[in-house]
Image 1 (tube, one colour):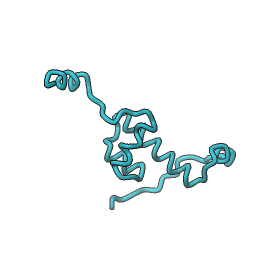
Image 2: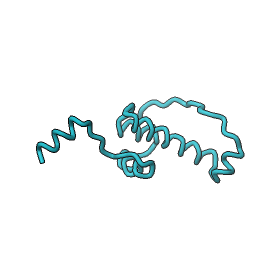
Image 3: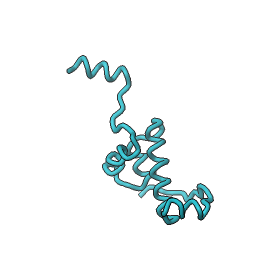
Image 4: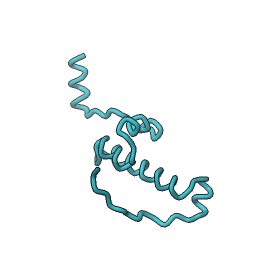
Length: 87
């Protein structure tokens, strides 16, 4: 398994956890997933790297993209034009 580093991200007010109705562990898990999704959406992480950040298998990560309204497959305009020519 790859080496990991413990990173303290934020101090979360108890009131926020109560409002969200989540435990600290659930909040940390959700925060990792949200960060992984955003980094993937920005193109800063591959789907595999983002899945590792989120702590889930790649297929689970890809399946969860729709929950965050993120396209699973992103093509550049050039790639899309190439696909159109091949169709």
